[in-house]
View 1 (cartoon, rainbow, N blue to C red):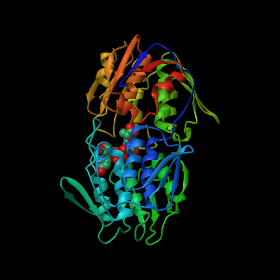
View 2: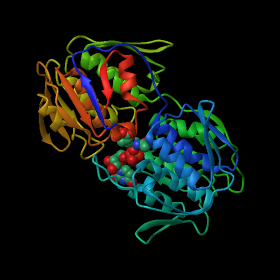
View 3: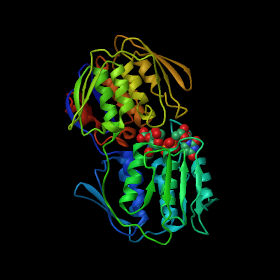
Length: 420
Ligand code: EPZ
């Protein structure tokens, strides 16, 4: 199955459970290597990127199995050395294995993680920070070799810009380092916080969790224990269905949504005329037939409006009332969804690589469109929900990297959508 067919014009109604967070599960699975004891990581989403991380851990010699609602990892034997395979190049999030493998083995050779459609995705911040901790990088047969001949030592790391992955890699290197580490300018994304909570449950000492300054006490010579840990719900998946509700004038319950991680998103939803009520079950969202467009929207590191929800917000705005200037400040090429949306009838002007002006139109028309990356692909599915007639979205493999089953979820909300 590589395309999703959507019959548009249906307002989303009903409730949908929110899957576990991809961007929390991946670094936590990597972190399970830091101990020889078994960990059980619960609520991991059944998505392609998690499957790939599981096979990477198995390739490294870990025993890994899906059981009682979680992934059990027994990293007793880890064969140190080279990490191979497209899983590394094809999946940016395996980059967090760098810090984990350095802590576990003291060295690793891996393919350079590739860039992707949304940006060049450099790793300079990772390299500079880890070098300060005693890691030496070199190139070996066009692969990246990292080694810490004298062992990893603590350091004061000051990040000039926020990087989720680089913060995670420094955390993974610091918890077993000789001496303490301070990270200034650390990413505050909830996924970094979840990683800190997992590491703390393994016995790591980390202060300042959730803030931009993290203090990690080195544990040289001592070991971490395994842990039984539950991954939080995925705020980006919850936001995807929230904007689907806004886009179709619906009335839904996002069951188990991590509302405490979604303040900026709920604020924008309310600016667009929706009411969002937080209850024990999750977030109830009621949206007007046509949303109002806020005059501007700017993405920013957490707790700002997430870059991963920019394409969905843009899509929901296309048939709203008014116009909005959207500024993407995190990635340099995250407006790829504009072209297919304009083909469907949207009025979006690209002012420069970082800014678009969207003006609400009466309706979108169904069309065959192609997903070029994960979140843009999800946004095109939302566009299909809004459009008159049928929309076919190809390139579903991108969407499967982050969503367990977007068709199943949307059908639970009354959408007419099938995978073919
Ligand atoms: C994480 O990517 C997420 N992925 C991304 O989600 C998310 O969009 C991003 O953080 C920002 O929140 C995972 O957690 C697996 P960054 P990451 O390092 O860590 C630049 C999704 O849809 N940068 O915070 O790769 C970089 O180019 C994905 O689930 C450097 O310049 O993002 C970008 O412009 C997409 N040098 C900015 O920083 C570096 O060494 C933020 O990147 C590292 C990053």
